[in-house]
Amino acid sequence: MQTILIKHVQLNGVPSDIYIEGTSIRYIIPAAEAVPLKADCYLDGQGKAVLPGFVNTHTHAAMTLFRGFADDMTLNAWLEKRIWPNEARMTDEDIYWGAKLACLEMIRSGTTTFFDMYHKPEATALAAKEMGLRAFVSGVCFDRFSPEIAKEVRMETQRRLETWPTFGTHIRFSLGPHAIYTVSGEMLQWINRFAHENDCLIQLHLAETPHEVTNSIRQFGLSPVRYLHRLGVLSPRLLLAHALYVDDEEITLLADNGVKVAHNPASNMKLASGYRFKFTEMRKAGITVGLGTDGCASSNNLDMIEAMKLAALIGKAWRNDPEAVSADEVFHAATTAGAEITGLKKGCIAEGYLADLCLVNLCSTAFVPDFNFVSNLVYAANGSCIDTVICDGKILMVNGKIDGEDVILQQACAIAHRLVQRN
Ligand SMILES: [Zn+2]
Image (tube, rainbow, N blue to C red; front, side, top):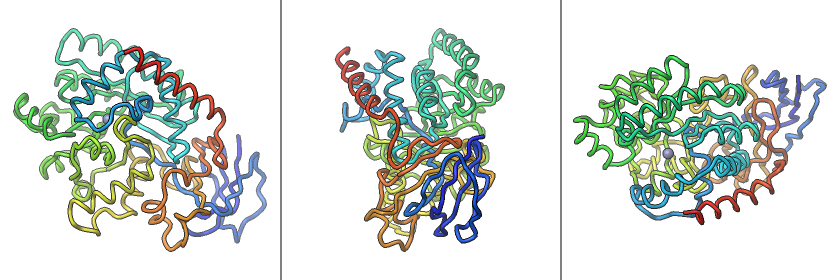
């Protein structure tokens, strides 16, 4: 088994040696009590702090190709005029290189796990596997209330599951019904049964805009969460992206059914979907709330440190309460809560936990003075403070260097230009 020894790194303010064996953290020893340990690889942790790798609980990785392509538009116009027509022309190769660029960016900014919903998910899964990240990858599906399309979606989903194991255990298959306005209730129920039978998670956009809620009430007679409840599809396997428009009773329904939520402050604000995310109410009700960036067409980066800052600032601003949504709470959401959604033993730097972690370079203005590390990380730093990243016990970036970075940047840029020219 491969072993890595990180020497003299700051862990909760204590200089420590961290010994990784295979995919897990085997020993953590305060540097003052350190004993000589032999390892295959040694990393110098001086001037660095260790933290769990971030979990991006909602993104569409390959949308990095649309970064800066369509900004400052309404959600509907943005989707219908700019995004969907281009997505319809995307090949496996386009999505592969878009996802490679996303993985590169996620590694650079300390993310070790992401939840993805997109077309041709095999291409995203391959990119994530090659880059060494952990991912829950779903193929986005729409039946647009057509029984014929629904039949195709069911066959495609079954086929995908059967071909999935070739991607390895840290790339997990999951299901991605797009939203209640593009996927029928029957399809959502079928997906729910399929997820239970095959032990996988479901990623769904929900209650993202007031328009969605109005239409849900008009079309189904119920608000989005109540509609899902009536369909019988609220379960611990369900991860909702956004959930901006939910009332107290709906929060209780989500909590009682173990539903998880991904909060995406950058996307919500940029698309002007809304900003009154009920972080405090959800946490009080016992809902696991993770943080996400959403895709790069709406966020326009995948920086989880920026997502933490935005979640904290907007959480305070709309309530006129500086004590609402603290740095510690958003740090928990970006690490431990995200890890809970994966169901894996990760999200904490402790013996026996998966070695998904990153080292932060403390030699920058954001970390001086050093009164409070989490405060500096959330409010003063950004993704560029990440120096080294390890996922599943493998080194993905060391001292800011990632193998093959130049090729990914060139290929992704060329592919993005070819894609929009094709339209
Ligand atoms: Zn999304």
